[in-house]
Image (cartoon, rainbow over all chains, first blue to last red; front, side, top):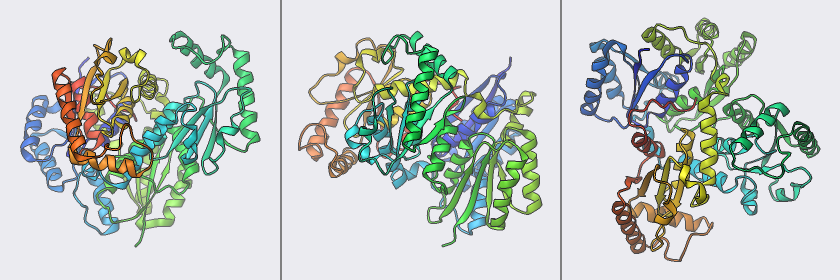
Length: 277
Length: 277
């Protein structure tokens, strides 16, 4: 099967174009693509070098680009047209529409140049916080959490914590362990949104069996993945969450990004929070 | 100052549109925007409800949307035109160009539906691995790492580890502590790319002073942020990294995404790896 060449080019990190391209590629699961990313392209000379590479692929190449610098963006568009190469200016149309809406000039600085901004620091600190408060660790400072996730083993607490932290929220996660009340641990965390994670019993059994097969060890006993034990544990967890009036979020069969959005919706219903670059 | 309404609408998580919009908004640092995200919009009825909300903002609204479903995408475009509302179809043009390049029909499934794919599992496991191998923890299983980051305190090892993990790489990070050789810890990690993190001394002094002010405690001594001590520590770190032939990456004044790309470039020079949705 032929492989088509896709070039992601940016004067910043190219993360936005990379992700958008990734989403579009998901629509073609049976096709292989060669995706190459060029970040920090900030002058015409560098850009010309990349255009030479692209020209070698010619008509089979697709270029997806984001330039904060208007002149570089226009130069790229002109050169691609000249050479008859498919190109998509991903961020230009959005910036232009925003300019028209607000009647303001865009700053023309790249995302990377915003490194020192407040949002950047918030995100870095939130990630550090989430790592230090994984799986019941760091209880002494749980009072600083924006979100506390509680759920049985293998409900995906850790990845969900990191994803929420990447959005700037301080997240702690705790295991739900049957018969071991957790409520004492939550003293002083009154300001946090506490979320109880629930999951379909069959799905949880599968994840736990996978965990056992991985040979990495499991919490507690030999009955960790037994359907009857899992069902009973889930029933206890749900009753525990409901009794305390906590938000219950079902993670069954859902993408982690979807779950994160549901939780962010509760934290920040009129969300003006804008994610990373 | 007026706030302009921006609607991000998707039949999947909307993460791609959210991030792209965020990047574009960075070009207007002095303007406030109301950004609202609607995820999982999969039928016309739900879409019409959102269009009613948008219509109330009228000409000041901007709608950025991504639909894997072609019919929903075309319906959205038609309705926005009809109502005279600014709209940007972010992913449609990319999908169409890919279709033309490959001569294949897009699958029309949303990103969320790919949850169970291999890449998803890889990413989840990588995040769990990185959390368990933060700051010198989990040395017994460091042999499974794809990347080992080593750097002095406050060079940003933890957030960088999580970002690389989100791309599916297993990352461990270890502190560089002067006078305490780390090389023994790295036995059995011969397959990993070892990266020594370096930073400008003045920048590191600032980060350490900030850490001291935060009152969270610092490793070691009272001289943690003293310029002469910091400069000496950095000199020792560089010598240590160079002596072992490790890749040295300078993080000074750079966005974390940029640093991650540099490291991914070494892991996977002809990168066909496509990030999360």
